Image 1 (tube, rainbow over the protein chains, first blue to last red):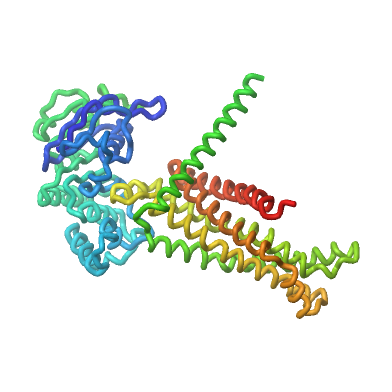
Image 2: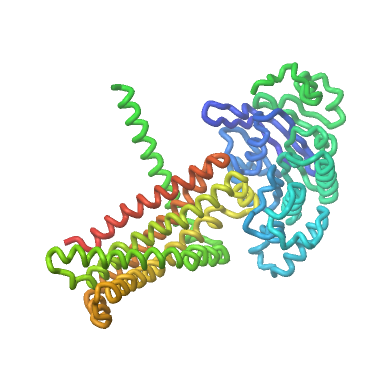
Length: 246
Length: 258
C-alpha cells in the first residue's frame, strides 16, 4: 500500500533522512520508533505531503506522490497530531467534522455524526459544543482521534499519540487506536518512543537511526532481535551504539 | 572594512529576500482569491472582527485627533490672522491625511497584531498542518477571508473616522473656539472636493489590504514556540505600519501631485 524508497531530506546542514526504505501493506499497522531528532516526524510529514523530500520515492497505492502530489489522496488520510492540533476557534463537533463542513451535508447531520464519532472514542455528546481549551489533554487527544477517523480514512497517521499523557490515559488511547484501526481495516503508521504504544499498536516495527531504517520486522521479532541499536532503545540503556548526547 | 561590507551585503540580501517572499505571498493571495472554494463563513467573521469591533478605537482616535487639530490650527492660524480657516483645514486634514493614516495605524495595531498572533499560534501548534491534512488550503481558509474583509471594510472605517474627526473639530470649534455651528458645517461641506473623499477611501482600502496581508504573512512564517509568535506579531505590526506610511506617500503623490 505504501512503499518508500531512498527518501532523503536535509534542513540546512542537517541531513535528517539519508535514504529511508520502508514498506507497509494494506491494513497493517507500522510503528516507527527512534530517538528524539532522528527524523520520525519528518518521515511522516513527507508521506502525508506536509514536507517535500529532497529525493526518493513515496508510492501510495501505486501512485508516486513525489511526482503527482498529495491533493487527490488527502481525503483518504486521517492524522492525529502530537498536541492534537484542534482548531481553538471552533467547537469540538466542528473540529471533528471539519472536512465535511463544506460537503453540502446539513449542520444538524454533521453534528450527529460528530456525536457518533465522539461516542466511539469514549466521549459524551455534551463535549460536542465545548471548545478545545475547555478540555483536558486526554480529552483533546480523543477529540483529535475522532477527527482523524471522522471521514473513515483508509490510511491513518499517529504522531506521538501518547505524548504528555499519564500511563492510564496512554493505555486507553493505545487501545482505542488498535480497536479503531482494526475495525476500520485502515493502514496505520504511528511514530512514537513509547514502548507500551509499540506493543499495543504495532503489527510491524521500524527503527530509524541516523537517517536510515536501522531495523524493520514483525512486532514478535522486536524483543528477540540482536540489533544493538534496538536493544539499547527498548531497554532504555544509556550505554550502547546510540549516543546519549544528541 | 571587509567585515563591514559583508555585513551590509548580508543585510541587503536578507532585505531583498524578504521583499521577494512578500511579493510571492501577495501573488499567492491573489491567485487563491480568484479560485474556489471561498470560505464565506470565515469572511463574515473577519468582516465582523476587523470592521465592527474596530469602530470604538477608530471613533475615539478620530474624535480626539479632530478636536486637537482644530485647536492647533486655531492657535497656529492666529499667528497670521487666519483663525477662520479651522473648518476647512480640519476637513481637508482629516479626510485627505489624518483619517486614513490614523485609522490605518490603529488597524495595524489592533488587527495586524491579532491576525499575526492567531495564525502564528496556529502554526506552532500544528493547526496549519492539520488544515492541510483536512484538504483545506491555509491560504484560502486563513489569508483570503481576512485580506478581502480588511480591504473591503477599511474604506467604511476610514469614512467613519473622517466624519467623527470632523465632528471632533466641530465640537471644539463651536464649544471652545466660538465658531457658529451652521457656518462651520457649511464651510466644511463647501470646501471638500470629491477627489478628497475618493482618495481617503482608496487609501483605506490599500491600508486595509496591507494590514491584513502583513498579519497573515508574518503569522504563516512564524518560527517555533512562544518567541516565534512574539517575533511574528512584532514584525507584522512594524511592517504594516511602515508600509502604510510608504503607501500613503505614494497615493498622496498619485492623487494630489501638482
